[in-house]
Image 1 (cartoon, one colour):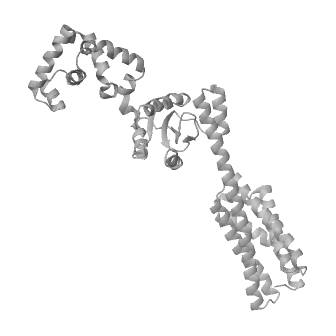
Image 2 (tube, one colour):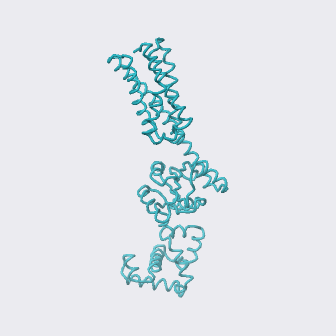
Image 3 (tube, rainbow, N blue to C red):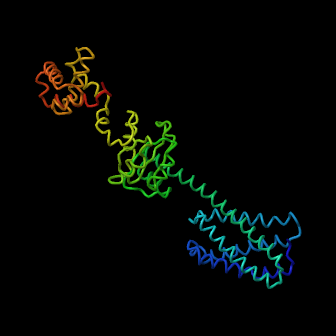
Length: 382
């Protein structure tokens, strides 16, 4: 559809007022643009609206055929760049689409009123309306594409900066380096960080579910098929919430540590993983302590349990387990028997054997401590 030159001239004459009205209404209805459209930026936006509408009028009045596409291509590129700029300005795509919707309504009302003044017939008016809204739809789609692409780029960049920060924390970088990395990532340092080792397939979802500012690191050399999350301020009463989120996910949760000491939380979780543990590492502290130096523990067991060394393996195993339960239940024979599913007389018999082997050493506090540590890991170290 081509409009008569006189109608196009009349419509062009009202473009400045149409642009002003559209911008004013957007400011009124979309709070996100109240400050953005003020001052020099407001004038820039008004000029951009005029240029976009002028480009549209060129399309519906130009008889050059394919050559007339050039203004539209320029307008679409400008709309795309507008969408990218909205991300950098911190505005959402919802705000952008609201602005387009309001601008389209105001522009059409003003242009339609002028077209009626110029005597445009109803059929042409209907075609004109369809073209106006199709054109603005194209511009808004281009802006949304720009917003989406810039958001993805910004998101990837932000993730890279946060991962770099996490690697600085884990690698023992100087405090000044870590602080500078946090500033570049626009990451506000928390009080504590808690390491969570999670399956890679769940890590991204968990990051979204956990507290804002959770750092995600993948491809760590010591981790295969799993990822690391560093969760801010999941200490004290907030730890329970963290444990609820990761429940049934085969995760390992380290202890909370001052954020600059996050490596300590990670190391605890790594040790627990090496022992085949899962869940809350705080629930496995005795075992983690006992296995902190496996060589020393082996030496301690060999020395403390030396009286059993000459027995047959099956007999030694029964007496080891009996002694372990006796120590853990503080010598309460009935409790020991219940724990081992045997008769109390069996426990009496075995304890007599043990006293013959160990003698008065079973009453010596130092020996009891050594035996408790030696047997504390149970079957894992047997």
